[in-house]
Image (tube, rainbow, N blue to C red; front, side, top):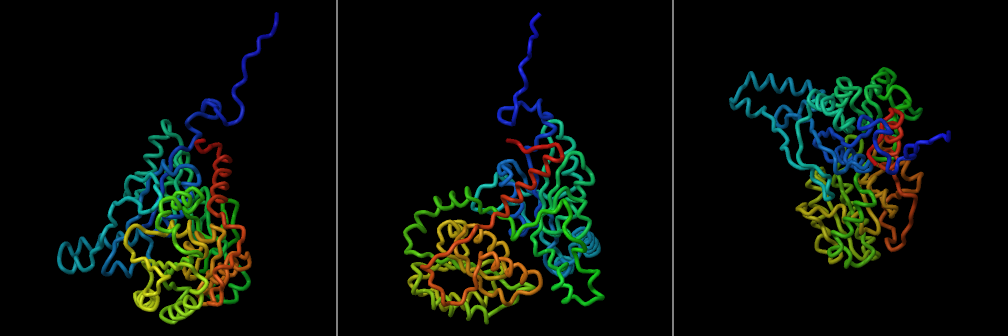
Length: 425
């Protein structure tokens, strides 16, 4: 009798029914983002989720700290402790005037603000038990849940979700959580977060403080290192922004120089002195510019922005964004020929350095600690140059663009595969 051979199941991933690869239980189709209300942190999470192909299948939950009055002095505390203190104050003070003075404001449940659609319907309060319960109860129907968190206030929430529902979630923590990295499936952190372990940093730390400075050990297997910050400015987003801003930016005389100004931080201090330096340098390069567009961030000191507006706003080549919608940031990334960016913002620098266009930095010499290390890394890679005011903006230069978000997404996919799961095709 002739042997009858049954057809083999499909090979590869194209067109393969889920029954051949573990069914719905092994396919991640959805994600939850744990945010902290700061765009710099939340942009990283959204950017990673987009790179993983879940940009239209995610929801965002936000850790809410009380704001205003005495609360502004309690931000150094873990968010759970801060919330408990706030609750006690409210119970003691009630609705009295003293209570109102100390009272906080909850962040409004508004859609995530971005010029690129994220598929986000609303922002919900982050509750670890509720999210973990949802992951368990929907596992058989919807499969595993990807949880992506970024920022200090999200650490306890993300780690708690992992602890409560370890068999149903894959948890990624962006930015170094300082200790107990095994609480997460994967940690994504910039290389300069490990600067305290270098011999150069150790010399700067008094011996009696060294045991308190984190991280304590080199990156473990579940740590993905990046050069800068993750972000949403991928090829698709920039192409969409180029189309959306075509009528505004395409007709401008070239080259277009875009200037993004942040604000001073603890390890990158500046004020009116840097504003004067920037004004003088911009005036020097205006002759080689076709157009100059300037944007400030929420952190820019009023004195700095006022000085720049006063000195440059009347020049016919200069446009200064007034802060009103629509925000031209993504359009600027798409259409600029070169950038000048203040040294304080790792996020703005990472986005600009992902374009492959010339990026000049103002104020890097004022940065200390790990941020000095970050700028040194960018310059050694040929990604950035100091802005001196002697540049000819019409002379372009290039470099291999930073691709941190895509590279981190690839590592996430590999780690998920090691778990026996996969992302939806």
